[in-house]
Image (cartoon, rainbow, N blue to C red; front, side, top):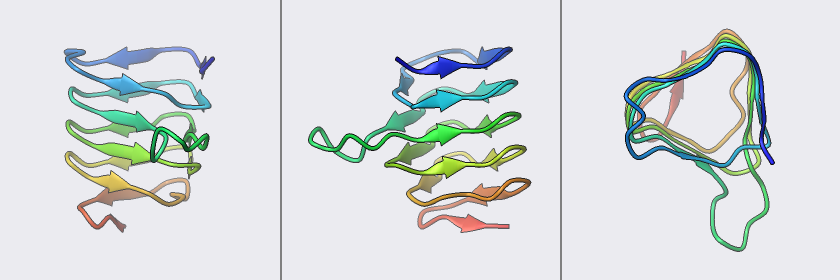
Length: 96
């Protein structure tokens, strides 16, 4: 039920879990990424904009919105909205 944009690319798609509301155009996802609800009982899923890159091992959970032109670093944990044109890294996450 996830709406996908154009040019979705999984780099070495190895053990990725994808459960988002929608993903925009030009999405790049590296291995071992989890995108989905916070728990089995939760219905909230991420909405991901266009031109987003998600690094290896990153986790994006909950009813969050990831803006356009965002880069999410490897092993980052995203639990809140990310504005467009941002770089996110770490756990707890930091927005630059």
